[in-house]
Image (tube, rainbow, N blue to C red; front, side, top):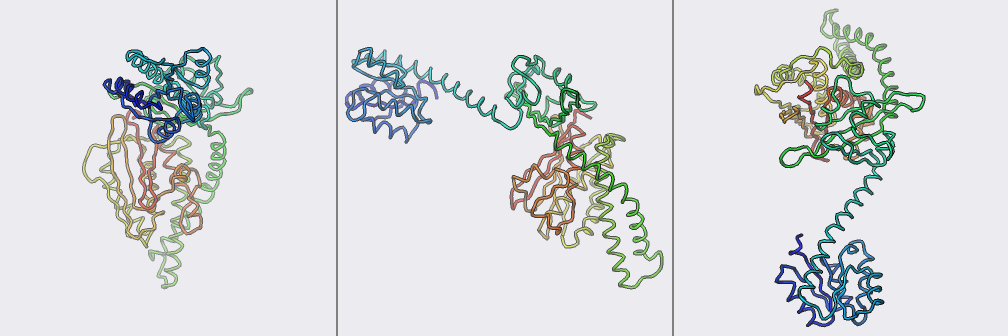
Length: 486
């Protein structure tokens, strides 16, 4: 809305006065809405938004003072500027108008120049008032948000932070740091081998850890950075969202210790069982009857299933131990999928014999290359594809793998035609041992490990995994690999 295109409600019980004001306003480009009583004026305000009210004081039934009070009572109209048009000139009457909530007065008989000047001034003041109101709303929401919110300048200076952020970071109004990144590096352990300022310049999620001291309990924050750029690509603001994950990390650490115990104690005997079952199945140890073959196949299937579970467990443990960043090599993704996709498809067909599986992947030789640990990368892809197949009730299962390259990241996208994931579950599915309630019946094989492995792998690489899903329309998982970190 510009001043010259504003909509003005003109209220007067005398039609000739309404027409006279219209004659001054319309040639200036203003839109005019008419009302001939206080009641009609309030009805008009419920039908359409207006930018200013020119309101006669002396009207029957409901005078201008009463109308002003009603306008100021309602949240939707309380900020509309009101100019009282009155023949009253006494101080007492003007005080009544101010107390009712009017912004200005025009005395009758009025001059066109005075009307236009006061209208223009009131509209301009209302613009600044609305900005202040929006700022107050923003600050109100900010201070009541459950997440810590920090706004940084392009030079990493603290511009604003909400109440939750000050609590998490131990800040007060008296000790706000000038340089925010210097403050963080002095108080928290930064992800190994990563430059904090470099991380903040891109969409990324990472963790900050403050070790336990005599004064403070241990604190682990999950930080999501979202840099905002203007239309020409210049950085204007960096938004940080802070979440206290100390308790969830403590719980996950206990679960990881349990995984470590189970994996190392049971994997070796399961490998022996699987090996002998394979020998029996292939007839190496002598011929078997049909019933014996059936029994051996069942033993081999279940042992293979358990070994695959142990692989995921050990994969998560290895990621947390830093092994995922060891033995990294340049991996050409097109060649990787050409080599591995048929092997994985056969594995899944044996794992899901009741499904017709279609895996589509980029077969061209586009130069998409990642510097990763090939073993862990294969485990991540295997877990992601298995997840797409496992929670899919369709007989004909379709999974599409695509890749795209953006300025600072390479994105690997896995899309399926499954049932979709409810919105309230989409954050939880990456938690250790978590499965959607509908599938905690034992009818779906799994232990809630695969997506945790995917998440942890991406976090270690300084990237992220995102999910988009609609009920009945399938899901899309996207792995965002930061190119700059390679």
